[in-house]
Length: 215
Image (cartoon, rainbow, N blue to C red; front, side, top):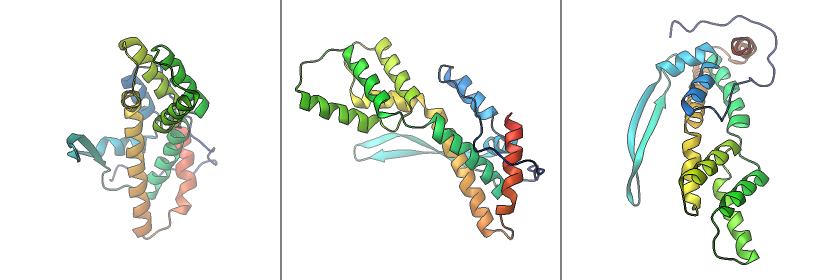
């Protein structure tokens, strides 16, 4: 794309980009603030990408509609470097899985609000392992939101599947943004492999410019 210009060189880049994130904010505002903090070249690519939708089927039939996002033409290794930098920040902080202690503590507190019949210690341990296994991919803030929402809107004991659905809903926007940044990074890296120049010499000025834009 002709409006995606090279960035000037600057000082070395720090190890991560301080993306703003407050899980207590409304999802729409939270998502918009996070996106607006990205470098302008990434924002332009996100605006110009194409969205496609197709139906997803399982053995039980129709499941849901899946959204596919494709970056526009003109993605370069420079954009890939920016996308990887932002993606690392999102994956390692915003979407980082909750610790086992936090997850199990939150689940135990939630289930204590809905007493069930007594179980043996062995069964309780197996139940805890199931919860940890099935919710272990989600960040702490999404699990907290799911538990809070269940406490305030339901009168019965939750199943793992029900809490999983609420966790997925809580971090839908952040996961979608991460997926789009990953698509940009992959497209830019492919262009570097097939292009005439090496991308390695471009990374330092690109990342340094990204930091300046996000301050």
